[in-house]
Amino acid sequence: MNKKVSFFDIVKSMESRRVLSSMATTATWILTMIVWSNLKLIYLKYLASLFVWLGMIIFVVFFVFFLIRIIKYKSLLKKEISHPVSSNFLAWIFISSAVLVAWIWNVLNPLNMCIYPEITTKIFYIIALIVGSIVVILVPFMLTISENVDPKHAVWIWFLPPVGIFVLVFAWNFMTLHNIWWNWIPYLNIFYIWMAFMVYLLVNSMIYSRLKFYPLPAPEIAPSFVIWLAPVWVSIIAINTFYSVIEKTNVFNFDLNTIKTLTSLFSAMLAWYWLRWFIWTILILWFYFIKKSIPYSLSWWAFVFPLAAFWIWLNFVNLNLNCAFICSLTFIIWIITVFLWFFVFYKTIKDIVTLNAFNK
Image (cartoon, rainbow, N blue to C red; front, side, top):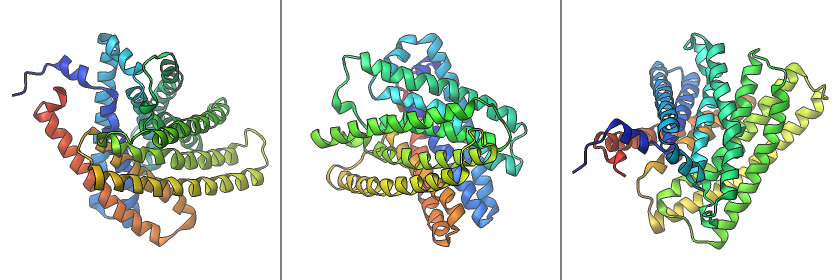
């Protein structure tokens, strides 16, 4: 029998890892909007509206809980920041904020679903910029001085900070393309793109070594393996939208033809690099399903978020290719993503209603 749970018990239980649901819901909403724009089925627009409001509500609720935890439970927050795995979940704040910035301009505003897009996006971007800058400095520092970090702690969740940096870059790129302009941001974006790649390569090497020399992690966190794929496709969006900014403003006085060629070449190299990891990820997950099984846990949200994010990226690439096959495949993946979202959402709500989520 579950014990009685107070409001502050709920606040204490709201670790950052729970907010994978916000990122997954936002990504599912964006993918639904893409499918709706391709098929023009009106009910998909309403379903997308449901996802967007749920995503925003989840984000706001968790952000309020996060602020309360900072004020009332500093020791819990310090413990979370010091933990070699859970500290990386703090990236949810600036990932969710930056994604909302990008897609307010690309989805909500064109559909007249956002009343004050400029003010709203500035607020979300400032949150993403401040929190993102703190997290990418504070988390590595805390891990460096910690005496409890073991190579086995190197898991796929470590990729969330570089994913967040890339998302932060293309969020501002979309704002710039809609004439919200601060002169110092392009210089900051160059720094962030470089830093994100360096962090990604560093984490990639550590995780590859961990998988090579240590047993596979517990099946409960196997879904987070898919996060390994996310930095590559968000980096492609980041550098391509950054080229669009340079093309529009030419703030650096670069030769545009050279930059366009380099951007296209680098994007193609990243895409082929991603393919290798995609095949390996499928094989690893298949091994888990066959040999170990993957029991349900909160980590199942990690299935939803990268799957939706990948097909959002592929649709971005398809704007230039105009391939009917990709449109059809996007629809199939959308069905799988929505099914997964409803399944994991149902299980999450069930845990909340039965109070199991707060007694763990």
